Amino acid sequence: MPETIITKRPQTDLKVERPKLFKVVLVNDDYTPRDFVVTVLRIEFRLNEQQSRKVMMTAHQRGVCVVAVFTKEVAETKTANAIDRARKEGYPLLFTTEPEE
Ligand code: TYC
Image 1 (cartoon, rainbow, N blue to C red):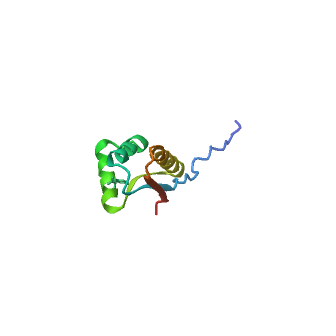
Image 2 (image 1 turned 120 degrees about the vertical axis):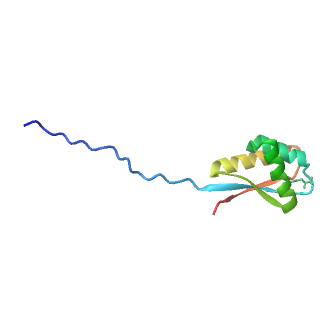
């Protein structure tokens, strides 16, 4: 009788956790020029001109606006780079990150 070889299949039902997401929030101030805010949103967050103006104006009028949602590390890196860019020009522009509910 031929020998039956039973081989274990590789485990395919491992659970993959969805990474937690973090919001990047743009905060209004009275000093940073509007066009500079738009430039930072375009360069650091890759928004287009229209999206950048909309986000900038929302923060300007309401005080804050969510820019986008990323994994933690990406949100923190983009936030730090955006703030660095503003400080180099002497502007108080602020972004914060917060976990999504
Ligand atoms: N309020 C600023 C001005 O009038 C423009 C501005 C908009 C600054 C949004 C920051 O997050 C901001 N020059």
